[in-house]
Image: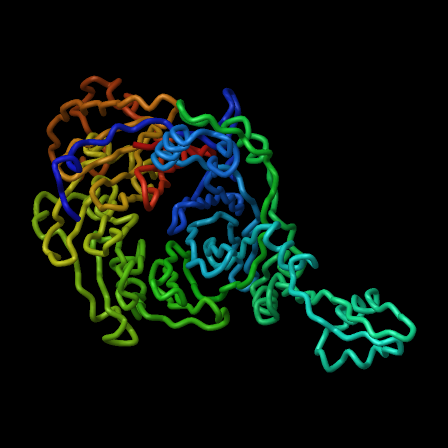
Length: 561
């Protein structure tokens, strides 16, 4: 990470597009609210999950292959520059990942909400993505319909020469090791010509892998875990609902680049390949792919498990924070992430504000051999809310693996892997909410979990806030930029909090007594300077360009710089 003069300058953000925009006066259903966002490694695909258990996949709108075939060289160069600066995305596919379930053994209702999405390494034309709700992780395969059709297209396969005689018997074709379908096909090409021997070309049709929905072992797991609908053939590409209708109307290309909106239809088939169940007793909060392309981890409040993508009925517990007596529990796991380069390193955060870096080569159980990152300089006034607001909700590695970005309720912190005593930079996000901690605790807003992300070069950082505000920071810019989620991203300064009256004791703080006696009785009913119901929780940074996708309710906004 190099910090040049140009990189320190704040970026100028502009609106790119919005997908699934809410119509004026339309009520947003809870199942339609976006709960997870993720770009793939190339940045060509974007996956979005919602509380209804659905996953929508978007792909880059490749304008250069469609509308620019007959343009001049100068026009193509201008179009290429504009395209690389702010790529446009279009609808690709949608499928139902999870359904509401009920665990009869524990009398527990399991929501269908998608907690996390992670793209797997791409090895062929197919796309693989991991999705999870509170209890079950699934591996999905997405493949273009056109690519699937070409693999079984008779005109695209290799032709083999077979000698055909007038008295040819079908059993004479067996040495050629053809399948029964090929044998039937060859019969159509057999022509009996008396007195002559002729050669006919027989098309060798490749057998297509049926790709069953769930393998036998996973079907058994699904039955045992009372998963509804897994034994039935899936509805390919899922339910379109409001996405299919809204995307075509709401995709708005940026000015200066002319593009045509493609017809909204499924161009790919999605099938469930693996189901990873029965691995967690508590709700899953994180999944992360390993750089080896073969394994991934899943984390809940007290345990982290290591899985192999090819083995769904077995996992290894590598971190266990559950004490013998639950009354001795002091912290829980809040997020976990694999190192982007070294497959043996992983980091996980806790509710006490600690980040632990572990090396899986040192021991099979890694919870006792960890390097702890903590802010040693934060030893000041401690209140009832100190540990609550110190809880880390999300961590992200930089692309080179040198830094870790963490998000707690109040701040965004950047950590250097070589210095665990304190963060190298701290950015204040909710500093203006300090006087309102009691109200935030009363309405449970203090427990909101905000995601964070950083640019591919590791210089710029972003996170969400209330009132659908996006906070973007850079090295050397502690103030940052605040942008509202709308088609006109005007910068909005945060309101300064009014000065607080002195408190007589700590008990007054915990009870929410911010004034003495009946002083200004209307002060207790003052509204916040932000809308606590409009939360910008989930966002993702494009891996190769300065483009941020983030969720505002059921709408997906994209900004570029």
